Length: 83
Picture 1 (tube, helix red, strand yellow):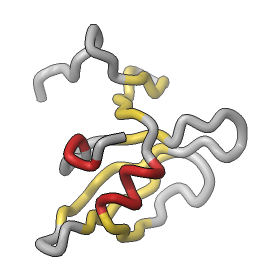
Picture 2: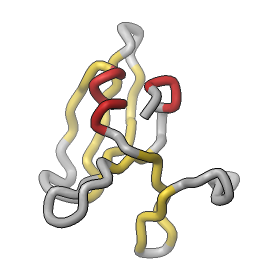
Picture 3: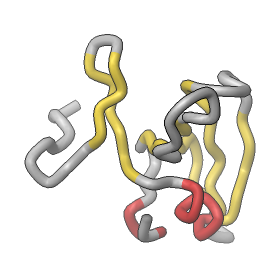
């Protein structure tokens, strides 16, 4: 994923199927370019960490949104609903 696509409040998945699948939500952007995130689904849920933006972008395969009880991949035809 392109690091310029990573934004505050966004949720991103690693795209791995099975027990290593995870979703991280960006909770803070730092002046040095790093981002803090919390794990909202998958192993180590509820933990937080900080990574360089490029490291986070390498981990993230695509952006997701929670629709009812399901994480859904955002695609060009499925944009985020207004908040």
